[in-house]
Image 1 (cartoon, helix red, strand yellow):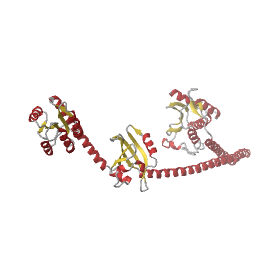
Image 2 (cartoon, one colour):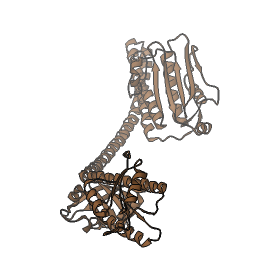
Image 3 (cartoon, helix red, strand yellow):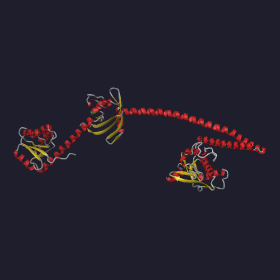
Image 4 (spheres, one colour):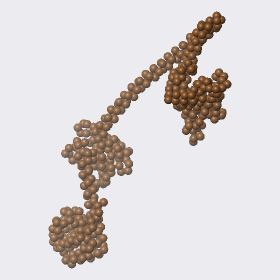
Length: 508
């Protein structure tokens, strides 16, 4: 805020010389005092000098104080006016209020302390008015220079004032702002007012989405913020409306919405086509695999018969060929069985329950061929490795992991396989770990693909379907799987299952 000047400038007008001398002597140390003996002399002095406070005696020849202060009010409105009068002269006070718009009156004889206080109070009024006028002028400059449209309107929607940007937006031209209103630019004014009230925050109505209908027939999409700025002399509320023209943005949004709608429609069509193709492919794969199994079994039986006939004839070459056929057909049958199981996995939905993974692993071990004496399997204690899973699918997954662990560790003098379990946040993690040949850790992302093999078929039998089936099972559980290992240092395959009801109760 601007600092108050060191000295207050006061003009005192009185036709009595003694009063002028007394006023000057009493207040010259406090204020910058000037005096005049007649209203005409005072008016001439005011033409040449600025003053903060004007004090006038009421009873003077030719022109009384109220009339003099009325002229001062008209020509120098910023000067604060005080009237000096007697106790009984109330009519003079009323006249001074009406004509001169006085700030206060002082009775004769004056009390120096009271008069000094009145002068200081009058200057504070002068100072605050000057501050207000400067702020209004600054606002006026910003109002007119703003590139954004600004409109002042009342609570009926009638425009009171607008800047040049608003006139340009609304195509008002030279028409006076108060000759039109918001109702001329919207189709349903009550609905617009309702929308404004719904977005009120204190004395501000923020981000009102509004479409204005311009007289030339065009439409302008706007974002309006209204702020309450006071009331007019008639008591009507006044609002300042800051308007942002967002027509281009709206058009771009509509264009993007249309593009997204078209894209969603095309994606839906393509997705349906893809799903139909996948269904057809699944049916084809199942049909082929199912139809292949019967002739392959016949070939296997015939190879066995050929092998036994060759043994009776002691024909080594024929026996060797029949064994190769038998081995190849057996691999094909395994592959067909895995493909059938893999294809069924897509159509089967998971049915979740609390499953003891250790018990499932024992069932898998019981159904396998007897484990070699050099193979040991470590399992969690019964009832400790509980996971939220589909029992049948979990058994398929663990059966594949157990078979892989046995296969890749069979060359070890002491093959060790471990089924582990741990809580991981709100879920459960199982792992199957072995001390077998391991794999190249840089290729772990290839393990779960269909027909992906990191070891030659001549060294380790298999179809390349097992881990792909494990990955598909974990996706059915909304879980995940990954593998860790190194060449010659064994391998670990991890299965992460989502939270079970038991885990959520424990977490709660």
